[in-house]
Amino acid sequence: MRFKTPVGPACGGFRFCGSASFGTLPFRKGFASSRNGNMPMKLQPAILALLLLGACGSPDIPDRQRLDGVDWKLMEVNGLPWLHDVSLRLDGDRLTGIGPCNAYSGRRAGTAPAFGALELNATDMPCASPIRQRAEAEYLTMLPRATEIRRDHSRMVLRGPGLMMVFDRREARGDEVF
Image 1: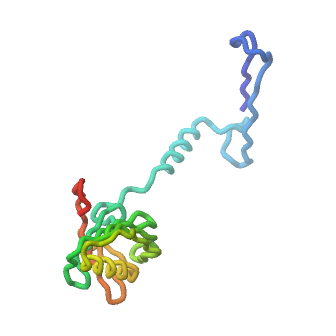
Image 2 (image 1 turned 120 degrees about the vertical axis):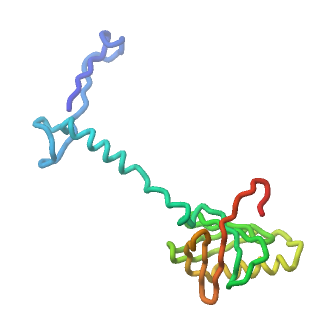
Image 3 (image 1 turned 30 degrees about the horizontal axis):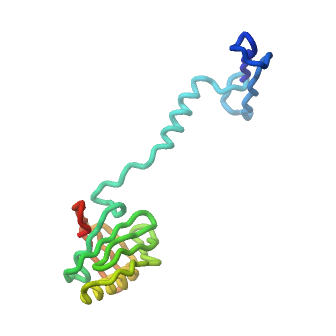
């Protein structure tokens, strides 16, 4: 496609006199094109629509199936109630949470139902209670043993050899962590 654009005194006083042209766009033979090698006007809107639709993301996962982007609170370990505040949040390949004493983070491996908690790091704040300190150490030892993740209605379940951890969705309260 060639465009002739006049420039010079007749076009607003630009210093260059003459014409400027834009080259033709090369199309392969066999491509649907008009006689002069340009794309037919009726194909352009269709191609634009396909490009725009391709940019759309996949639909959101229903809330009842989501694992990522949810704050979870540990409720049970191996069928027994867990009495200490522990949260877990999964975001893509990252996992974060707050234990009874410290915040922790790590790398998440696998795609559900596979799960892996790798490279866990925790802050090093002193714990006021030895019981809470032991509970945190126990949790941070159990989490890497989990190899499977799934939703069970409103709960998230992590399983591994001799391990079942059940989490409930934790409702945000705004000003407090737990």
